[in-house]
Amino acid sequence: FPRKSTAFDVLVLSQNYPESVCFSFRKSLPTKKCNLGINNAWGIHGLWPTELGTVNPQFCDKTQPFNATAISGLRDELLIKWLNVDGQKSEQKFWKHEWDKHGTCSTQLDELNTQEKYFQVTLDLTQQYSAAKILNQAKIYPGGEYSADDIYEKVSNLVGKKPVISCIKNK
Image 1: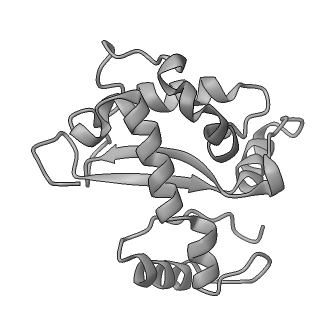
Image 2 (image 1 turned 30 degrees about the vertical axis):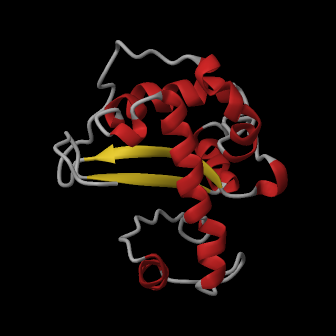
């Protein structure tokens, strides 16, 4: 997006692998119910305005509360791509959390100044920067063993961006 004065430097598109998220949940609560979605495919965690080197802005505008009706036209796609891995909470609660915490901080950009735009742009960016496709192009396959440095270098070279990669060692 065109750069203009905002309270953040970059937007971070966060994607996750549901089985890994569930594994993390179950480390502290072994009976945790998880929603792994269709084929345990990569999912969206969120689009996060980020100020480099500091704590990210959060919960920026309480005058813009979450309104599920505003994204009703995206609901079917969101249910597939932006699911709540926490099987004890609804997707809508997760979307509300992401909007309240991160979306309200992105509204300084015209491209993200409504709930519908925030969720649609996040869906679009996920299509453009699909973790599954990028890893496949990098020849990084499920079940293989790769160093975090190798993954970082291959992904960075493919997308021309600096990824942040979180791994669960030996799992």
